[in-house]
Length: 566
Image (tube, rainbow, N blue to C red; front, side):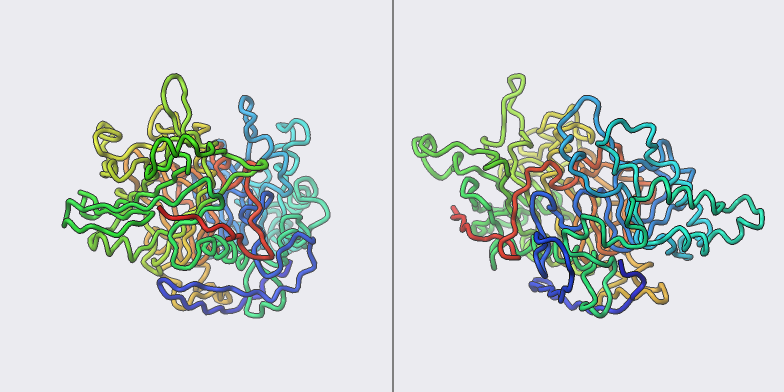
């Protein structure tokens, strides 16, 4: 895979403009590759970034908290190395009691860790020698083969890189031969490459099946796109693909006529009594003046509230899968409309209203069944360099236009006309039970697509220039600059869904307690500043259960269905 060919790309964007990325792709790849477009199907719901917990188009920066999951990055910086909290860095793990995710592991075709440029570092974060030492020590202790039974996790015990062992030795181990024990001996590096490196691809990541199948032959975007197709560009194409699911001027789209577009209006009691036009989602000003409530109706046609019960009785029952695949819906979350309905809004309460067909009876109680859910894509637009900073007041909930009032008081949550917890709605014991299987399944069905959200210090124009390490490497690495940050939270909520950030970075710290259910795919940097990743988190990666639909249609998204609005 081509390395260290840097350039500058200027991407100008308006708040609501539709961007078209055209790649002059000259890649010899499998016949399944969709030329000049992201491949989105059962095997690759996120194209080249599929099935990884964290995918960074540039740097993955990690501090002390433990991490479990699969990582793909241009470079990895481990700030504390061997001092990472127990159990340290670990790959995905099978559950001894839950077979629900067996297919996910059995279908893994790629290693647990992919590092494009093993020798790349960032002296502004950590000096080169310590950076390399920490990475080598941590990789050497990950995914011990003697803890793995059978062939299921064989790939999960391997790493891949475009850097050869000899290149690493030349760059970092010169002092080891002089008898300095603090440095990694050459033999240790050679043994690591011999025992844990994916066979037959050393120095050429383009041979990895995931890259071959998606037409990717280099990691970073460069000025001359005719040289190939980069993973960074692929991440942007994936985002645009999902944005394009929504027809022009539409806020809701469904791949099946079994799910209807239920538009509703709401008369504000505060700060005015304006009757709004019908829409889905429905924007409502909350009693908390800086919170905007956004109600998203996910309603089966079988449950259509606008027709009589007699008509509903004659309507075909909702089926969660068709030919083994689930449907998918896309919704627009427009910042301009948030502010239009509530000029003081600083936070968003995203409220899902699922109709009865998505519920099931369990122990005499009606419980939201994530296995009945469609895949849901939330396309956020209009943020630019304003960023998306998750704070108290932001969150994901259950409710409807009559039960939408925000609260961070657990004793009030779910009472009266307040919002309800997603976790308890799907059967968890409390609102923050992040490892509940149904909670993880809910997260795996949701994609948060931040279509035009940028790092505030790498905006207009967006730069991929790295020759002086003064732009891309050092942008979006704090809670004040990252395109999407999770530095604080409201009691009683978690963030749900894989974060797809095509033009920036992701930052999370210890204040969120690791309470986000899904993965992260960012075109630039991912910084985990003591933000823990649990051993179960990767089971919430978007589309990981082999039920994802094939959305490719002649190289573009399928939009053949026109769902009627009610």
